[in-house]
Image 1 (cartoon, rainbow, N blue to C red):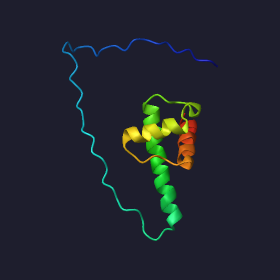
Image 2: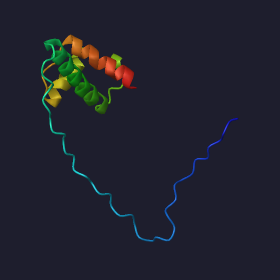
Image 3: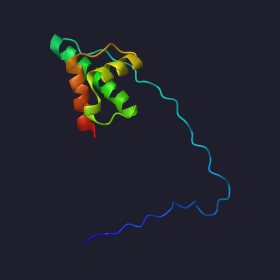
Amino acid sequence: MAVARLMTKPTEPTGSTSPRAPETVVAYTPLRKQPLPAGRPREWYVTHNRRLKAMRLAIALLDSGIHYPATADNTHIRSTADRIGIHPPSDTTCRMVRALIRYGR
């Protein structure tokens, strides 16, 4: 059975004539970095750092308005990396960025 949903404008709570109190802004505190686990093969560390870099780039591209992998070519991804202050990514990392954008939608 289909259910109809009525869109209404939210109402202010009754009984209060004063304006809303301003929202408390909590300062962002970055997490403390922990060292990577020792004893893994070198390839694991390379892949781990590549994934982190791809994730940072994908977030920056999404924040800048790039929502489709077709619009994120290698030069655009590399210019974004330069803008946010990280080393230019390899072709493999650029492919990972496009994959994250594709599957993150």
